[in-house]
Image (tube, rainbow, N blue to C red; front, side, top):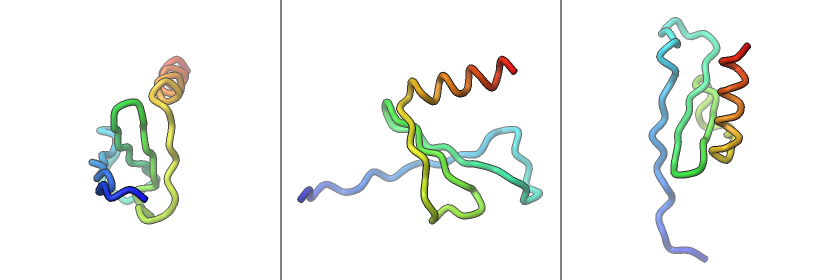
Length: 64
């Protein structure tokens, strides 16, 4: 069992997100890993991606 403290993630929303309470996700990064969660339910499950996977997703969405 590890005695190391869990990593504290610094979450942020897209600069395109408003404060109107609509649909939004938050992202937190650590080297090589991207965490994604629902901003309205931050205690629920998170998605975790390798950095390369997240980069491919972002490239795909920008090209559309």
